[in-house]
Length: 152
Image (cartoon, rainbow, N blue to C red; front, top):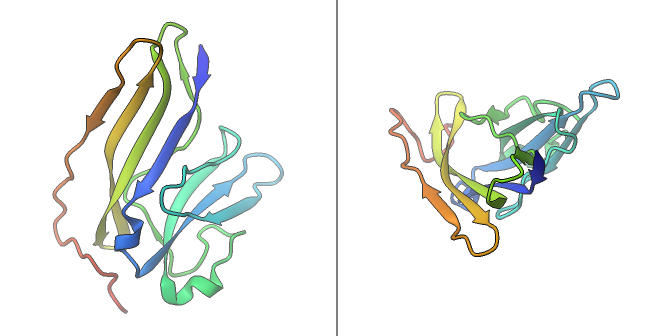
């Protein structure tokens, strides 16, 4: 087995100005310390040690100044994502042609008390003289999907 770089990004966040996206890492060692970071467009997500827990939350922009980067969730109004994203280096067999993988998730909107995301694409970069493999996935149909955050 060998480890290959794995980059996971959330695209199109800029189309949802009602929220700020926060990555939250909960360490499995050191007493479960929580560290968060603001996710920037085009940035690979990270979680440190492979066994750490990782969650992404969306916090309404009017509460951006109140985000606690040492708590999970980072604010009482934070919404979780509809999908789990796990940005860890991948282990592949030695003969596997992939040298790195990039996956992108897209935000669809808001439904119930979650931010709806889906895996939109996967790009496997292959080694010497092998064509890269690009896969795209269709967006799911989500009933009662909203493009704006509902105000209480």
